[in-house]
Amino acid sequence: MELLYVKALHIIFVVSWFAGLFYIVRLFIYHTEAESKTELEKKALQTQFIIMERRLWTIITWPAGILATIFGYYLVYRLNRWNIPWMMLKMGMTTALWGYHLINHMLYKRLQKNEISWTSGQLRMWNELAALFLVSIVFIVILKSSLNWIYGSIGFFAVGLLLMILIRMYKRLRKGN
Image 1: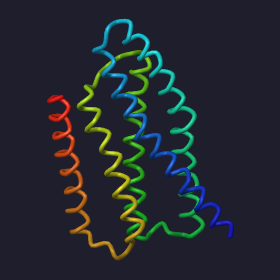
Image 2 (image 1 turned 90 degrees about the horizontal axis):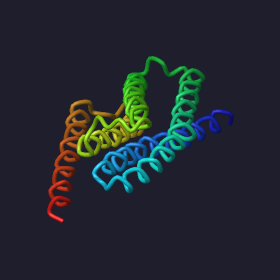
Image 3 (image 1 turned 120 degrees about the vertical axis):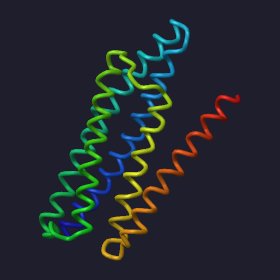
Image 4 (image 1 turned 180 degrees about the vertical axis):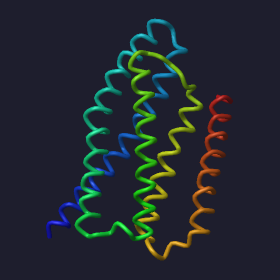
């Protein structure tokens, strides 16, 4: 019974972590795009985005990522799932997700000082990486040992390619308006 509560908490914090990761990069995009506004608008918008980014990042995203990881590792430990191939792959993807999180932290620190280092287009592409992590991790967990690695790998890259195409189409559509 205890493990069901831990599993529920793990899922809740994974959802919260991904929500924070998706939204923080959207805020980065808006923060970056405010750079092209008039000086008055730019100052007002960027001041507000700094507050929103700080609250989201420190109150939701960091704690959710830490708690999702703690509850996840607790489950792996209690169920002794260390050497199962799908779990090793999931843990590898989670480690890569933490890399994504830490790069977002670097971007966050720069934007807190209004140092714009990425374009909104680059950030839009970067935002899609979180979706790839989400899709990959969910498929690994759901399909477990029935996962066909060849089709899974092809599917992963196909989703990535599709997302890139959709972003480029959206970018052209925005420029047309």
